[in-house]
Length: 317
Ligand code: RIB
Ligand code: CA
Image (spheres, rainbow, N blue to C red):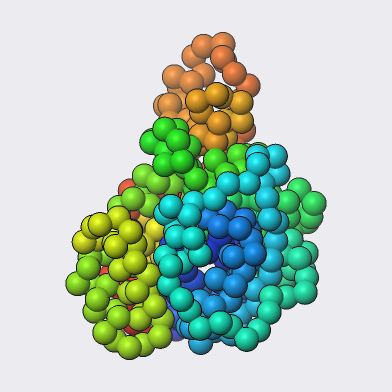
């Protein structure tokens, strides 16, 4: 008897790679896509919402509720990433406009209600700045009891992308990210260290377009748009890799480490500080700083070939 599909809620800032994750969620038989919540990030919230609705419409998943959340970070002034995702957030592609509108309910309230009412604990998959999720956990901590785990795309053990030390989702809202990693919910950090390893090639993207299957064709066009944007013959599946790790966790290697987010450093604000020291060493001396008290599962290695294949096969089917 195959396991029942995993109930998931995606929190997105659609964005090209968020769109790839939406297409994977929309087509995977191993996921039950309960809802999608939108937040500021790659582009403004009022672009993220229609992008998300249009991608789900294109994939034939107008059954999936979409709710709009916060349009700016908790503290940080809002910024975007149009150089990466295009002015419209989806690589300049023009999609048929969805006929439906988002839920009337704010995403944080929608998350609260949906999680508390769920018959089976929900897996939260934030692929964006963590503003919605941090607000939910702060204002409605009672939801923690019905969250199976959080698998978020964000942070890095090593080099950042938004800055030398910070990854974009975390740098966009460091306060929110620090709230989430301290929340005490089983959490997996899918950071840049693995995010940068899962790619597809031009022939693979062209083959997706040629299938003429809506989700595959759109995924192919999004991937080709990114290759065009960067002048390359391959591109990352980005956020879709984080979701692939929910479908097939065994292809991702994680290690439990204390993690906090730097909030004050002039050169390091938004850095995910991952304490990889052997425990014994850490205990030998008088501590230089307070204990982190937050151990989460940090992704260290990924079977990138497996996630590439999983993505291509799933969106095609
Ligand atoms: O740093 C990469 C992350 O920032 C991805 O989620 C991308 O969509 C942007 O949100
Ligand atoms: Ca994203």
